[in-house]
Image (cartoon, rainbow, N blue to C red; front, top):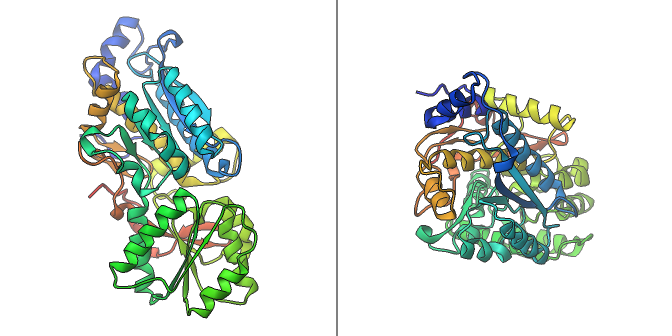
Length: 414
């Protein structure tokens, strides 16, 4: 039995030994406590793609930092059977056309798999490249429901470790209905993310025999939504559900405050982004959103992850903690799958099959992953893994004290 308090690196060391690293270490003359040095000559290439410049870099960079942190830990204990993990990093700039070009470049560089995409619309345009080339893609951030539904489960090479909108929207709707906020105004941008989120929110409302009292659509970059806010107020809305990834969330919050309209703003996880917190300032306080990870040291592995991230990147706090944590866990899940390939055949179909049949538990930062994927199911997270976050004094904390207590125990997939 693996000790649940083991760090990811320590657990990887034990897994490495269990899968045969011990023999490789012995042959190298290294001691068991000092894994054999890795050789860059036979590195395993893993692609990383997300926006590292442009507006969406707000969550792309923390994701990249989480990925690098995991890779450094893994390489420090010997990599994969003495082979280091080498990242091939591409900046999609949050642009679908650029993302498609960068994805093709990754495939041309013969990566064995890719961790990537922060924006739903960017991911959607490139999925076919990964699917047709039979190269596994693990999406650590983008949440659009259709991404893991485009291909039939048994055929799909598209995996995900973020919480899809189809579980975030009902989770938030259930919470606001319990609070008595049933007259919902939906503010959704016109990107693929906003369009998909609107469908999911309307479906979640319909399941409760409710309809939105007002729906507002707007492009990214909008700086004034006063007229739409007035219309929502006139329609009798007592809560605003916003679905956008950038500064537009702050435009909604500030516009609501300027109107003197004291209704709550709720939404999916982008309400935890720096764009919103810094952009809306005090107008953001009280906002509620679905979260998979809140940056509080509630257990040993989360504390270790947060301390290591802060030290490595010389920051006091992670700008978008969920992106960093989900990127980190994605790398470990991918490398764990490699250890399950006894033949050493790191082809796309072999890695796909290994991801679908992971038989060792990974005690991650976001969750405890026990059979996270299967032949039919490519989403690692289920609704029971979500908690409700709340903005308080410019930071994200638990909306309910009982969630903070339950967060001591990282949940498993249902």
